[in-house]
Image: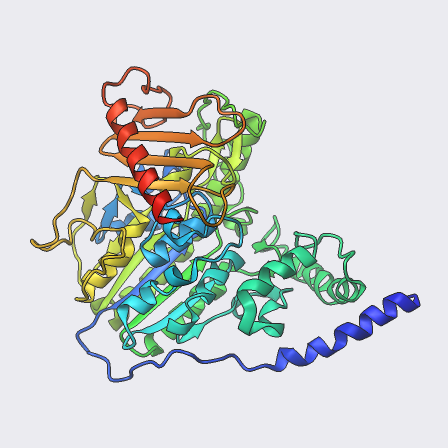
Length: 510
């Protein structure tokens, strides 16, 4: 170590003192709660595509526990995310607003402050005990913006085997800024080169990489592909499920608990019993034409990745089933709404793998939604298009609260009262604006509009746009293979409606 490196090391040491800061408590929970108010447990499995769930007809048996749960739940067959990756998808769920309103459209991008205050914790009121947790730092960052309305914001490290993050320890009062700066400080990846800080490099190498290697060796038999992880978080899903099992009955009631699990988000690391579960099962992912925005993945690569993804779904599904069984055996079943959903899907088609893409096809945009009401005994199936922005007003409806006029969602069918008109012909939207400016009009991005059986996809503002519109009849063509934009007599009306919507929200966003 030379003199320059030593001085860098000494300059960083005072920061360690900040790690002793107590977490601020900002939400005054009203203990005098109304016993008639229901509890809400919202479970989100990151990057879970409805197109890969056997619950919705996928050939592989990926979700047997969700299918069992569905026998006493309301199942939504045309439910859409608000955005194509975690930031816009999660923020839309939390606030009941589309990305063009909350503006969390970029990676690690916070919501606009006025919109962040309109989250479902705040809308339900002080008598609800609010808990939030995520394995995913992006979602944790958004939950941090809801801190004033939360009684317990659990940080990722609390349910991780190992966590190399320091933002929450050093700068909790500025966590939303610090977590992004820390990511950049480290070079953008969990184990990338830490050239900007010899102190951080030496500390991280000693305390984190060695710890990771020991954990991988310890759990190698149980997790042969490695432990579930993302960035510097290493965990097993069972620990988060066990926390809910043990702590839900002890929470003050009524409560609103949101847990955002990482599986089946990549990397795909299921436990041993699910590894190669679908190997040689005789089913292969269908081939689709390569898209102009292709990432150049071969069909063989896509099929391999999809099989591993399906295994990871099955692992997550088994843990979901274990939690549901526990709740069913407890008194919580009599006064708790249980919701299962996702923030976005995952693509394995047209040369594209993942969810960082300009395209908005069904694998990416259609997500599960299941709701079990207290005491529900029968299955209900809803086939009209619904959106993640509908969850917030539906929770308020269940709690007997008025729906605020700023909310862009509707109460989900079949729960509307006579004075809550159900618009079965309304349009729902998926918005990708990750290359757009944070504020101002939408000038570059992709928007999908679903109305009835029809889906219109609009690309705008990119340098090279092969064709600005695609249109599909999802009822007749669920795989989106037959673009009917040029031939459908409805295309002009849908295009006009979408153009008017984009014009209005762009004007409001300025």
